[in-house]
Length: 460
Image (cartoon, rainbow, N blue to C red; front, side, top):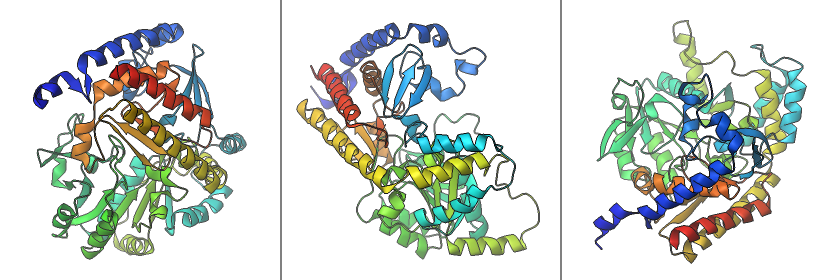
């Protein structure tokens, strides 16, 4: 059979008929195990547009969303009493486990003292030095989401450079920052398909190139019109793409040579270690952004800046017209965030916990790779610290275009539901799995076994 014919009848080396059959049988098993959930959620949650509080809850591949009763450590229990080993972990928001005890204690303490008052608490005295020591940059601000932190950092970058353009990498993920909602399609920069209500041509102020392409990076920066490059150290939100050796060195060298600032967004790659990918691999960003897990699940983010950027921004503020900066939200930097963040930094994001996470992630990587090899599947596994992903295509991948091509939604959806039926939950939009400090070796063993059972069905 010619490859073009094969691609029409198979996905990721698996026939479409077999994928459809697995999806049907696993969907039926999912419904049978959740009669209460189906009765309450099957027709949508009342009062919510689309039947869910947030639209992406409908993007889970299960027949209807799982209605959670409780979560603790690295497990979720639904209202039907089904217990799931949780490797999604709120897709990184609960990367350190659900309600880590130090964070839960801090929240209880702060709850009786007030939740928000537009003023710092004593916990803020500890957090500034903790951020400096942990991540290396000297000056910090608190926001509520990584999207906000990225947006505010880019505003500062434009202010101090006097430049308008932002450079992003094809396939990147930085929340809902407008400038990052661009893609390369057929080599041409365009607005990302599917944007709701977007009437602007975002490519007017955003350049987009492929990750790992040093020549394209040099060409994009040579006109010295780019204020800032915003980059994940590893592309993470579709199919994982690791940096080529020397790519980050070239990125830092070329940005400095062209007067361009560099923002490293560690919101997903904080899985690498206590100081993120930045500290482990010696990156030297002008801005550092971290959201999602920084406060143990309480919505919070941080953004830091270098001495030089802080000095230039202070000079800018002395000369700009008075008025609202366009940065900040009323609930940002509230005492609940401070309390949870301090507990997370001091007691949860420890070297000991990361060592355990990394060890189990290595086991998971090896176990999944062993299953793929056993059934001779044309797939591979990628990992950045405690973040592991199986990809239903050969690898490794080098850029966003390859990651987009490797994405196999129909096949992945069938696998995800089948894993849920075997007691395992992974991230819904791709095949990402996280190891938390609360994750046990037994849970990793069960995930590998479940993955093996599903692979056996697909490869039979």
